[in-house]
Image (cartoon, rainbow, N blue to C red; front, side):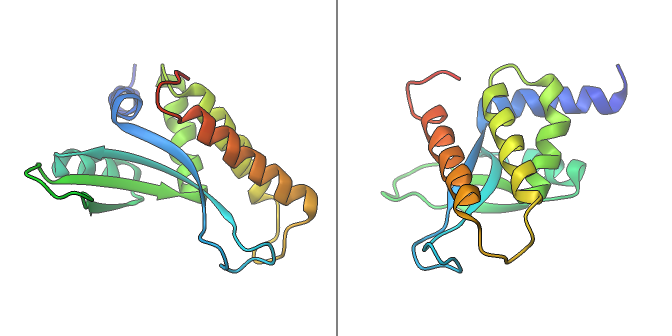
Length: 150
């Protein structure tokens, strides 16, 4: 196994345990004739900033932000590394061979992004394209539902 594959395997294990994939739906009224649009996002959350900075550097993509807790409390700071759209798909393709848990999520995410990538930017979606993206959003939401194993 190459050094790069060892690193990808490590990050994939981290992603399986601490990460997630969503198809984000914009708030109503944003840039769409239908009121919202969809974007692929992948993320890893952790209290150790340095490991997320390493992952960001490894892929040379994404951003890290501090997570805010709704009820405050005495918790350690939590950070989240996030990649979106094509960058997310690229990261997921690299991690996929090493994942054990999130394979269904990745397959759905890559299918979503592949179809999205084939549409012209800023062009309004056809009814068929919009229905496909909305269906992917609903399927991912179901895969991510607490208590459901993927």
